[in-house]
Amino acid sequence: MWIAQQDRLPTRSRLQSWQLQISPLCCLCSSSVETRDHLLLSCCFSSGIWLLVQLRLSLPPVVFRNWESLLAWIRLSTASSPSLLRKIAAQATIYVVWKQRNNMLHNLQAVPPTTIFKQVDRKIINTTIARRHRNNFRNLFSLWVR
Image 1 (tube, rainbow, N blue to C red):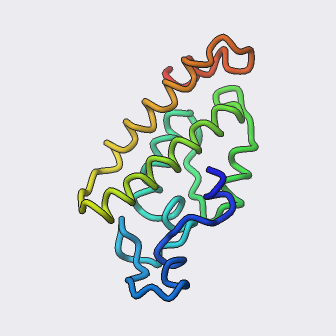
Image 2: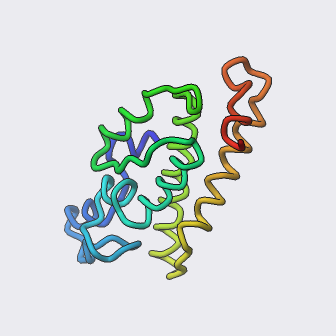
């Protein structure tokens, strides 16, 4: 997550800026330049996963256009989705989208967003269960699986 926050992921646009002779198009949608914000937030693939995350959190759908809008969304806190649960969900989503991007790039294996969301779901469940005895994690599992 720290590398994504610093915008240091080796996206195709970044690799191309290093003079590598590669296509700058997104590995997942092939319709836009692969930047951090496009790949992790606004690509049709990743935005489908974000929609599923927001539905699970009982939140109205928000389309993230840039990294700052994601950070603002994470900082918000409601009774159904506290900021800590949003942070966990954001970290899990970013991780699995990046993992799928690499899977597509290196193995040419396309996986639908609904299947990738199951990985997000599992990561969030594992994280909240493992820390359930900590005060600030106590109710997060039940808020996620309701």
